[in-house]
Length: 224
Image (tube, rainbow, N blue to C red; front, side, top):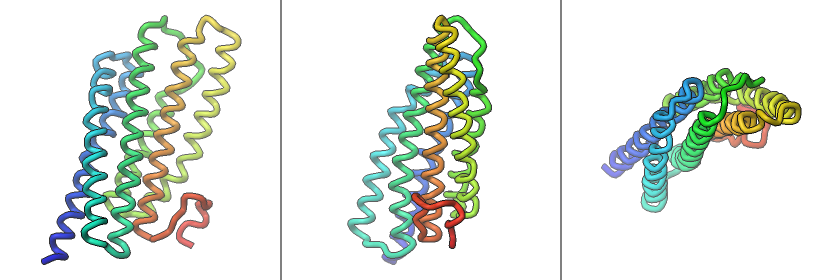
């Protein structure tokens, strides 16, 4: 009976985290769509969702800490709870990044539209794919899928570096377009950070499933 109650608590913890993950994914998608459409309403929805995400982070954190304090879980269950605590933080920070993108889209809406030498939609699609795949890896407890997220991180980093150089040159050569370039630069950085948080989630899935801490190891070391 005790074990059944404990498993029910673990299931509740996972379900709450997945609800929060859904809110965060929605915020990211809305922020990305807002950039493409310059939709101020979507930006406001993203900003409004931040408080709900923050509230859920506190609730999940408290539930996880209560389980650690009262149940004293062992082995894989302990790793699961620790992974949830870490993932919870990364999801909240993704929500912050989505809100930051929304603020910058609103700034862009106040400026003349110019062609920027950066493919923000492509970077956004890749970052969103990392988030989706990392969360799917968590849902399925799939360490192999989590590894595939780690491989995508370099692509996002490369695209962000390219954006930094291209937009930096634009600011230098066309200072009248500096406000638009700066907003795009920050959006690119936000997307790169979202990719970093997705990578963190993938690493936590690997830790939970395999008991391997891969945060400071090359991908070739994973599972060895």
